Image (cartoon, rainbow, N blue to C red):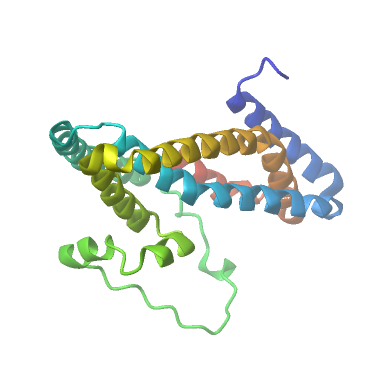
Length: 220
């Protein structure tokens, strides 16, 4: 097991989860808290890892001129890759048609009327990226607003230089700590996947992989 890559361990856990779910069926649901714990651990690390790594990465550049050049390239790269990913996504979804076999009758009728959200304009999209309250953005896990706030802090640290070197040191060390915590969480990923898959198969059977499996494959 030690020689296996993390991807291999996850796929192995996935397979073991299916087998356990088929054998024990709903009796395997006692594993659900393990799966839920794994998901909570993932959610726990996302915000601090993104926030600290953005600040640490930008502030480590050290020169505002170099930061401008890199920033311009990053924005350009982001735009190009976003357009390409959208095109690829549309092509793959059109070929795979992951929701074509989904029956509306499978939806549980709660009596609630669901209205589609109004599409945002370009200006609204840009404004939504800037947090009114950074603390609220961090508390609610609004990643785009967290990234924008982190970029501003990173730029400010770069401009101020040695005046805030102690702050930069604290952030860099906190970032190292979060990467270590992330590594610790990743080590239990195969067990979390096993528990989640076993409970899903145990409760719903292999039919869960029909439409959902096609969606996952399309997404992958």
